[in-house]
Each structure stands twice: as structure tokens, then as C-alpha cells.
Length: 291
Image 1: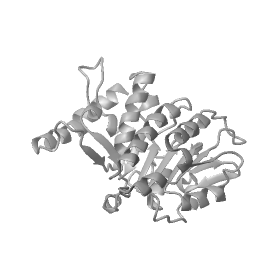
Image 2 (image 1 turned 90 degrees about the vertical axis):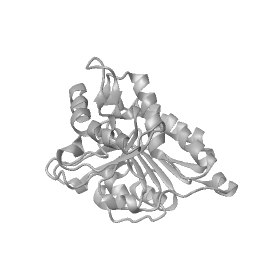
Image 3 (image 1 turned 180 degrees about the vertical axis):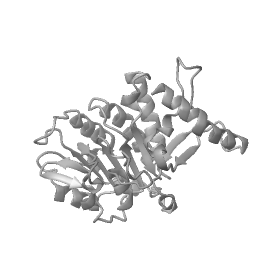
């Protein structure tokens, strides 16, 4: 992984950063870069490219900028998340649906999803609607998504390599597939946090087409999506989500434009410090897509 990240830095990311610096777009504050990769680059973690010891003095994109991804450029033309300037708005916003499924039949237990739900409840209290087993059915989750601003799905996720539209979240009564999600359109949707495996994993046969669960959430109306490039560790998710939601709660309380990409950037730093930088497979997969 160190060699891959070094090559990405030297051949792809660093030349772009140099141009941005020359244009005065990279200064003391962390700028926000949105990557729209194509071809094989869709499988590679541009957001953490850099030089990591012992391959040299540490120099990474994470120290220079906050990164997001977008599968298509038109997504960047959407309105950003609402601005909550009144006290009334901040008191009732967001309506947050939290679905955690620690013991779905036929799948390995993921007990730390309960910890995720608890951390979100601590950050947002009555604004968080917690849905656990057996209430996390396909129809209940879809209905909840239609009536909430944000959704957090802490469950098993899987990418179907034979039929990408069958990629799915494992819920208490079956699979919520990408094809089923794509039949929805939720114009009021803002943030989807997919705390599940392989939710932003590309297709080797169709690298130019974004066919994964995170892209599906963008397509049905969500402005921002937190996804994963590969399988994640059950114990890592609460470590990421605790600082992520605390930062988001502070942003909501402050009012103005929400910045989930910055919240994830800081949360990833927390996880990296906790598990150790050398454990790339644990802290690298979390990514932000959209606005």
C-alpha cells in the first residue's frame, strides 16, 4: 500500500497540487478538492496519496487538502445542504434516521453497530430516530428515508460482481438492492452515511460507470454520501462515527453551510491515530462523495 500511495502521489496527485499552489489555490487553510477519476483510477485512494515513512519524509494530500469524490460532474451542480440560520431550524434539524442491524440472520454479527447508534444519539438526541432489529425492514427503511434529512445505515453491505444492480444492504427482512433504491427519488435528502462494506467499490468490467451503492444514493437525491472503498472493520466504524457526528452537530449548531467532507477528514485522522498509520486497510476506505 505504501508503494501504491507513493506512486499515486508522484504521478497523479502531486502534479495537480503543484498547479493549485502555483495558482494560489492552496494556502494556510485546507482547500476542498473533488476528484472525478475515470478508468482504473476509480479503484485507487487518491484521497490519501502521499509519501509515508519509511519511504521518505511524510508528505500526503491529507496534510494539504480535504478530498471528496464524484462519479459525475453534474452532481456538483446541485444545491448544497440547507443553511440553518434560525434558532428554530437548528433546534429541529436534522431529522436523522439511524438504522443498525447487528444480527441479521445469515450474516456474521456486527455488534459494534450498536455503539455507532449510541454515539449518534449522544450527538443529536431527540433528532435521531433509532431503528433496530427487527424493525429495520426494507419498506420501513425506505419510508424513513423519505421523511428524514439524513440517513445512517450501519449494516452489512455487499457488492454483486455479477449484477451490480443487485448490490445491497442486508436488512432484517432481506436485501435492499441498488435496483430498488434507484426506483426512489428523494429531493429533500441531504446526507447518507453508509457504514457498511464495499459501498463505493467500483466495477472492474465497467470502470467508466459508477455502479455502486454510494452512487445510487447520490442518484436518488442525496447531496453528500459517506461510503467505503472496500470492506471495513466492525470495531473501526464507531471510532470514525463518534468524531464525525460530533463535528456535524457543531456545524449544525453554528449554522451556515454544512461540510461533511471536512468532518470525515478529521474523523479519519482520529481513526488513523487510533489504529496506527501502517494499518492502511483500516483507516483508508472511508470516503466522501458529492457536495
